[in-house]
Amino acid sequence: EADIYQTPRYLVIGTGKKITLECSQTMGHDKMYWYQQDPGMELHLIHYSYGVNSTEKGDLSSESTVSRIRTEHFPLTLESARPSHTSQYLCASSRTGGLGEQFFGPGTRLTVL
Amino acid sequence: KQEVTQIPAALSVPEGENLVLNCSFTDSAIYNLQWFRQDPGKGLTSLLLIQSSQREQTSGRLNASLDKSSGRSTLYIAASQPGDSATYLCADLISSNTGKLIFGQGTTLQVKP
Image (cartoon, rainbow over all chains, first blue to last red; front, side, top):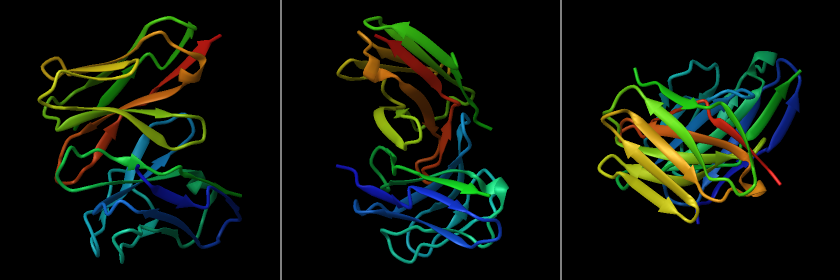
């Protein structure tokens, strides 16, 4: 069974705070992704990683940053949160080769006041 | 640039009906196509994945088809149930190297008891 975890599930925070959204997977997948989804809108890729020490920006510009120090861990950081960052953030992973199937975590719903 | 469109945006049917959700894409050079289900405020659950060399995939009451030449995929749900109520998303994998998915806007399905 696919196991990919995100914490926190919900976060309400004030403007200007630094936040880190956690994502971990136990499947040994080398590729990981962060998507942003505004309410009622489609998902947009904001970051992805091919493996350890590899990170790339996605199709949608984002002020967030990511790191990939360990295969299983792909945290996303906002240095100074703003109300425009209010959204749902979804993490996913897939393995190189195979069918390219992506598995998603439950998401973090972020609200910046 | 690949664009994915889903029609209709919303659909309401009585329990027991068979229904079809549509997905169209502009670039036929896809690696595979995935159908996902998303419940409100939750992450995505993978339903079916069709490789570019395949025409259809089946899982229980779900059947997904792929016609690359016309740039279309359909998700057929047989004997719909209230528990099928959710948003259904299709996504193209355009590169097996990057693993990047391009998502449609989704079809929100309501099945009335």
